[in-house]
Length: 494
Image 1: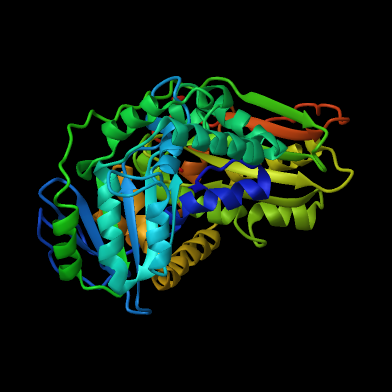
Image 2: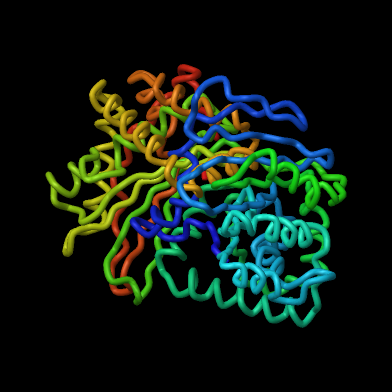
């Protein structure tokens, strides 16, 4: 199973975050959601142009027509992730993702996967803080088969204590290999825990080891019954398909699944953040030091949401390519780093984060790289970005949106992420226009809002023999542009 969790610092961190950020880069022009149980034609030509239905039992169905190949991507998204877990049960969302392949009243353990393979398909699943999703790539004429077995495990999961025990061993080994054996993953986990003072986003998706060891059959079934239901799910079908036929099949198989009573989706919110934090992790396995800094930031859904689009533009300007500000300053000009960059995802249901990372050149102290990074942030806050930088960044984002139409997964990921984090298909449709409207003043205001050292955590990863670096001089605190003179807590992906 694929675990969507940004565990690594620096470049590894950015690669792992990509699966969450893809929706932020590809919130593309698509048709607005239709009224219940009907699909209205798109008002204008978009990139994905989905057709949207809502079944009587509350399940939302989205169909994306793509005629490039006679294949179909079938995805089931549930509006539940690791941030929805109860205290003491960290990792249960990801654990259940594994257990969903164990069987139903009519399918034996592993039979689901055998059916998909026998029909020439491939499948997997992934868990995030805000959602869990399952998918299959199949020939388009095999779509009814995967819909049938997916609807079966939506309501009829069967687990034995022995199967749960075996799979618990699997997830414990997964944590050992992905986190315990990777110093960069350990650092990131500690930095994220320090950043989120109250939010469940501070828990790792895979869970804490001591709590994972106690997860039981009862825990898994209880979580399943609370969250897995048609009225808490979105089915997305993309490919060479006919929307009317997909709807008819969905009504036949998914429409037979009964809805359940769902509790409100509760998330503890962040208090004001008033002090910068530092995390240093030393380990003999570290070949070279690295640095990561993470700031609380707005998302589409929480906090100063109007800055989410400007922050995507700022991310492009600061650190997403070899022509970015940070790369040109620290790698090309100052030659203190071998890699440097930034990252931001607007798609979180709650507060997101904006991060910076750097790896020093051999022999360069981490403190010197941090000082250079601070200097660039101070310059940004003092002088701002230019009109040319904003124009070029917006163009790169718009180009990515255009190219995304060739990929079945991109559209499904964009819409699935939106619908599981409190947004709509219409929000996805409006993404190019909203990016296009971002101004220089908005980008500068967003930078002043986010880059406040008291709302950040700086993490350093050091070889065991290295001395802990002296703290570098922090950039000056700036007032919140939304409320002059005020000091706000972090504002709202991943």
